[in-house]
Image (cartoon, rainbow, N blue to C red; front, side):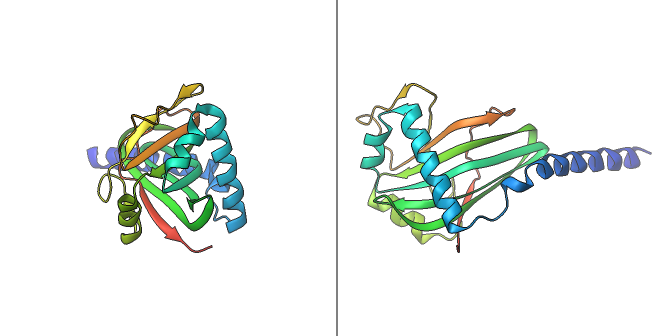
Length: 187
């Protein structure tokens, strides 16, 4: 009887996760290169509007990986997905997806923009050398919590890889990138 109750509980959890993800299916469809570029431009503009000093900071970066409208959802078991572009000198140099999973205290859904800035040539080189670059495994990201009106102090940011999560909307308040895997995609 216990085993059957456990099976019913797991089935309920899996069903709840599927329902949450089904709500976001239109958000995780594969996008064209043009659609990704438009979304990336919009995310960069939001970053500039919301964070004072963002233009100066972006000008100092060797490259930026911009992941607009990343969707994160779950109920005990969660997932995260988004598509974006790597920009070097303002030009797109490749398209990437972000995939992450989690298990534990997870409930709700949210969308957010993510920018990962590679501040040194070495950090950018190590990103290119790995297929399926994973935060915390292949590179440590100094995650900066930014909100509207925040001022970036570009003189004190000295980390080789700096990440920003901003413009979050939804029911989750989790800005962690731990375990997020970025893989190049063809578009």
